[in-house]
Image 1 (cartoon, helix red, strand yellow):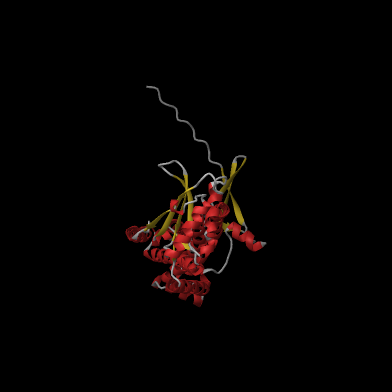
Image 2 (cartoon, helix red, strand yellow):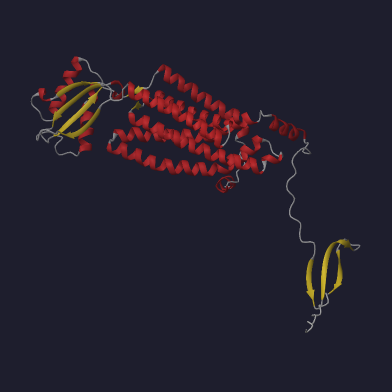
Length: 388
């Protein structure tokens, strides 16, 4: 496959930047659908954000959970409450600090009185308790409160400001605009996917999304660094438009971005499989957010940040003039490339006592350089020192 071989070698020539309208249309559809999901269906916030009801019951020796491992006991407990139509059930096995006995801890959204008593009775039977009053019921508030959310939002704003300042000084302000646009694209698209599918948003999801901002920014900076290098090498001569330079740069780092994404997605996929197999809800929330965000971040670095940079730079008078000359076929205004270094003026070959010099000036009738023979220099006589 020649195309695959070119991608591996970094010699691919896909017209990525030239198809910016197509990428913009795809992103616009995704973002509109994301906004529709966020405004229409809202995010499915877990009980860590909304609060709920917790149940704690000691596990008796006669319980069916006694011989199971902790993972199997959690799965059995969550399955036993599936008939009550409770959307978000979180179960775990813990050890009581007072009695050093294993306890079943379950947290659910707020329940009405009728369903509350039914769940209490079911959990007592599951834990092997004859008295349902052994099940302790507590109404809990959100562990991820408004104060934590406001601090996380302030941290995100400070992060975006610092990123903008860094890229503006390290590269240029227009690159900072492209990078920030890609970050907002990643956040909105990932949140929209969560809203549309109805995946529960937990604190692990928020942590994963904040982690992915750094990953997406890293991939974008790698692309921008290659663009800056190529602009200084070939784009400054005026023989290529800025869009062509950006397109060549993206093609050269395309395989690197694909390799980075695949090497990231494979461990995340293994983590997701393990979380689903062992019913580890926290790991599952983390792995799902990382998997979705990695794909979205790689897409935005190549198909969003780079085309936005090209569009902004093409509006500058300098690159407008370059494009106008290239479209008319007039490259006289382009800066000439550096000439190759000239060879040595003469190539001397020793032939006995005569040096043969091959010079460029005198040529024979057939255009070949004439050989001019020059006598070898006479040795100098040593002067005798006069004795005083």
